[in-house]
Image 1 (spheres, rainbow, N blue to C red):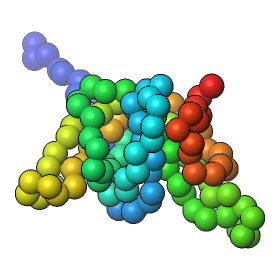
Image 2: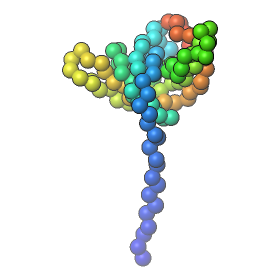
Image 3: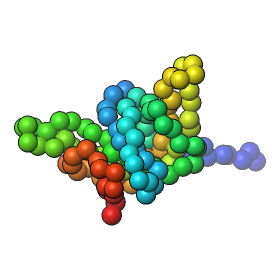
Length: 122
């Protein structure tokens, strides 16, 4: 009698080509670095940056979603943690680097540009 194998297909999260400002740092790091998202989904993001981290580094991220509704309103942000899963040079030497980051928990909030001692998860 033939054996049937059940293959479960997991759909890949839909990617969006959004260029949003992102602040990132190593988990509990001192200073924030600035970069830009290239692609983003519910499970991860690809960012361009000048200061990449090694694969398997756990990072904290702040992604600015939009400017506030009025001049006094701070922008909405996604605060999240993630793990660097891939690092790649986008061009030649001295060109920006891309980091692919798998996103873990996240929350949406309103805030201002991060200070060096800001901890979104405290």
